[in-house]
Length: 260
Picture 1 (cartoon, helix red, strand yellow):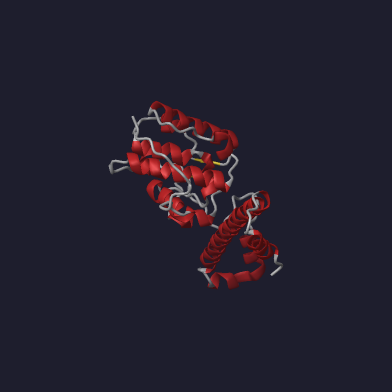
Picture 2: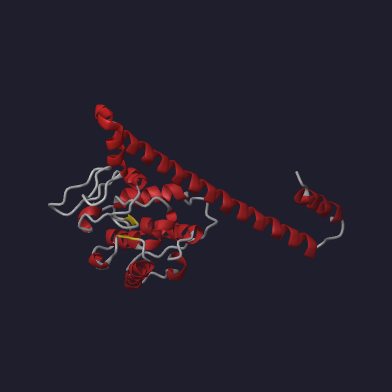
């Protein structure tokens, strides 16, 4: 039986989204870039295996997916594992699979507390447990370069299948890189590190874009949060006027409605 925990979003010791995501990626050697990507359910399945080995069949988990019905499959496996351990927590599967930040962030906060309350410190090899399958949002062939940089994880190809370098074609369609070499003549051969530098630059820019996207999402969440607070204050002032405080309420309204 597992140790149940109570979670409230008002507690002060909650970790930030960056800290929580880093914790997941570090523990599982996974490639998630955003909290929303945990909607796949794969991380929760393997984290349960860390806590209670054998509580679910990892071979049934889709570790790297962007297909919603596979999200459902993973989260149901996770929910069943919680039920078996008599955990008094209902997984909001319908909300999590939508990939919205707030739903996934709040659930991850709860699970972190649940994990800390039940983890005994034993060693665990996450890659070996999932037979070296990559874990992240998408498919092994569509993981972004920034995701690989995020964890340093390497996507392993089947034996006997060479990894294709950036810029090489499959023999049927010429790549942009090969066309560029043909047009430029032998000049490109004088700069053998050009492809690597371009790949690094693209990966760096992709990572910056991801970080900016997260900051924008945080700003939007904060804006919505404080707007709701202001609406509540306005309703309180209008619905519950008290004698002797009219001047104070009017002053509050002036501040709220000020254009600058």
